[in-house]
Length: 420
Image 1 (tube, rainbow, N blue to C red):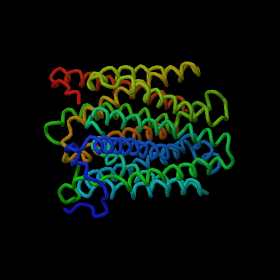
Image 2 (tube, rainbow, N blue to C red; image 1 turned 180 degrees about the horizontal axis):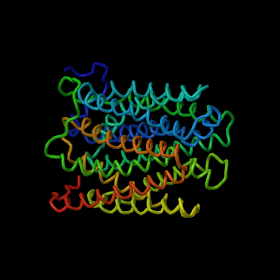
Image 3 (cartoon, rainbow, N blue to C red; image 1 turned 180 degrees about the vertical axis):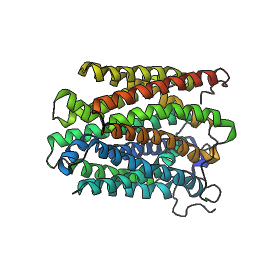
Image 4 (spheres, rainbow, N blue to C red; image 1 turned 135 degrees about the vertical axis):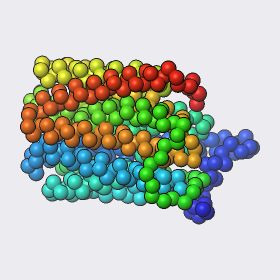
């Protein structure tokens, strides 16, 4: 397949050829700028998809819907995101990153515009569908692009930046929306206008991306994981299903839960709790960088289970301090599991199908985000939200410990981490 004719840069695969020292230094700086600009693009895309988090209670009052509808709005996002991931990951391997990412950014902007113009619940569903298509198309391609653009070729560093940018966007969205909703006029409009403006540099970044070496002709097919990495993929994927089920809870129902617990109407407080969990995740990833990825998962899973255990206690003994403790532990556990899992999968993935493998990994991640929390919303229609959250926390805590046992057994026979 011919190279993209609009390319103005040297293909990524030509990096490393001998150049004069001055030119090589300039090329290295340019590569570094492209790498961090790509990380910014991932951060801003995920920020936009989580701007609605502290606003759902306001929408529920304005349009008159229940907590179950909130989880449906969240679930429809995941329902379109997963097929988008499965199509766009292999497609970007075949036709190049730019041709997939630019339409994704346009869809993200349209999703934010849909929220800004919302006059009914239907608008919220439509906007979430657009956002799901955007993030599904972009997640695998951007993560693969970071591996390709990292100046020193370190997959481990690329995985760290991918996870921190992803979690940072998840956390920045609720804080930004909550702050603007409290302090700015038109609280249901301004956050999304800001997001559209922030997407402009992301679009410029994608248009300036170097051409990537294109693979075989794309055709629709079920996701395929190379045989040699299936065990690694299964354990890391299941661990991250549990970790991201907790993310789904904190991004949908925990803000309402916090408001009920504190009897506060401050939108920043609800969004801030979700952001605190995600901030802990991002910080612990930075601190844990360079550690063996399997060990990170082995430590992260019991910490995650402990945080969920505290969340169960909050249901029977309501306490803001206890809730904050549960939030901190859940965030730390999530960060360790996510960094360890993505690094393990990224290290094992072959270059020729990296975006496809990473997209399949994100399918598991986003299924964890959307499916379990839908069950919590359904439970909340027959029992109190507090009880539903407690049941959820207990079940996911048990699942985390079961995955820990499976991962421990696999770890005994795992090869030494290459450290790349």
